[in-house]
Length: 291
Image (cartoon, rainbow, N blue to C red; front, side, top):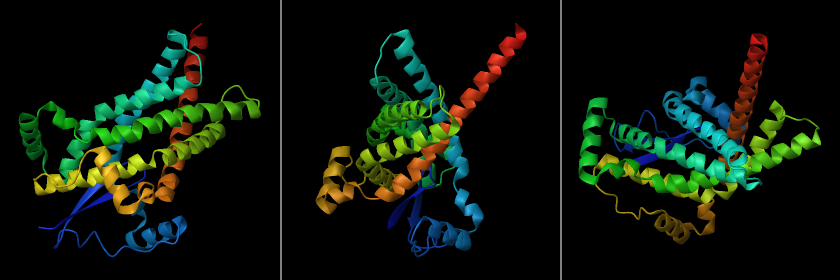
């Protein structure tokens, strides 16, 4: 049986789609449409698949992204304040450390859910079948098997978050000084988020390429039920990419990743900062009324 695994990204999260030659993917996978640009892609996707297809894969994305983002942002704020005010550390490195550690915590918590999602997508298991599959995997390989594939994810997401928060705090402080405001506005947070997201995306792109290959290999492995005969460690995969495509292979998908990550980071951080300021003001008003 020949199996193809497609890695489909809807902007926030990657999804595995398993295509077995035959009738299983004829309704989904068609000859790829050539896009001349982002706007052209929007037009052709809407024309061929409908407007709703632009939000395809949203429910599983929300199930994974919401708890991951809550853990991530909360941990960052708490760690940053602990390092600055609780432990008395000062310096620009604090956002870098807090960002990396908070992402490490979020990834470690969410990683088993990622593995569960990959199993469900690759084998189309029901929840009862999934429970049996996970139990047999734990019995055979131990509890650490639930964190399989964690390495490439950590190598991509932890440096990305460290660089992202480091640059975000610097750019935000610079813009606040430039416009002579004490607190970042929505537009300042949006701009700082987009710039820092683009920089972090470019610098961690090789690890994103490795993670993509690793996800496809895991999808094939879960579908076929046998170990994939490819090198699976991060450095082996990276050496394989270098041997196949050279250094350009490690930066494949440069423009799509920047186009995806920069606005996503901008929207996420600006709405988060706006919501945080809104509720802080609301709590302050409530305390003043109570006095």
